[in-house]
Image (cartoon, rainbow, N blue to C red; front, side, top):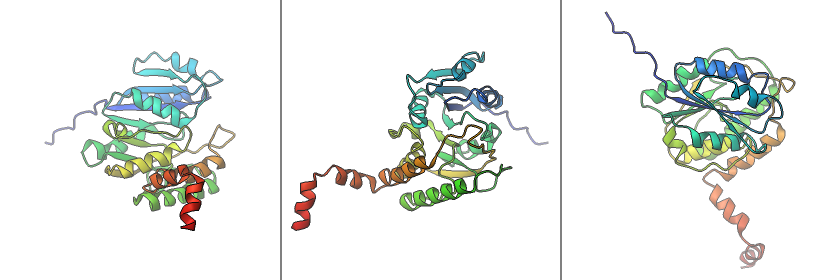
Length: 256
């Protein structure tokens, strides 16, 4: 007779950046708290103008903490603050809407818990469960940005822009994040790759939402993502030096 596996232990800090998510924030917190892996939930309210902060503040579960930004700064700034407060061995990003399902935490954590991975990406494009069909051109843009990121990082992801990224806490402590908005996704990917951390990818479910339902990312964020892929890649330090180099030096060098 086989010995039953022990129940999962809470080991996960869940960081939720939130801006004007009063329609879904209560439900996503309920789903996150239902996971046996959840040790703490850190909601970073990005100066919402609706009742998001009030709803989070009314949650009675002591695992939930609310951090309030003084003014709207963006997803990247919210994640920086949430990561700095995380105390559990593993840290995951959870969007405040209902596009990503906390029921996937078990499969996302599996490579980490068996010691095979340092970082796990949840891929919307490599199998997993059901997927809502939404914007075609968004999927094209995501694949383009992922391919470009792979070229400059020399890793083989299928979904660089995914929300679901899980880290050993030591990984997040190994670099400084700088992007305030959605450029945080390629920045994280580049810095994880440059650090030589072991990366796994796991298929997840995805229930994408429309702009009418509150989706916020736009084409300008895609342009910024291209810039961030270049900036934070191994070429980045050379690009930054060249940008800072006085114009007269460049002219003199060319003439020489």
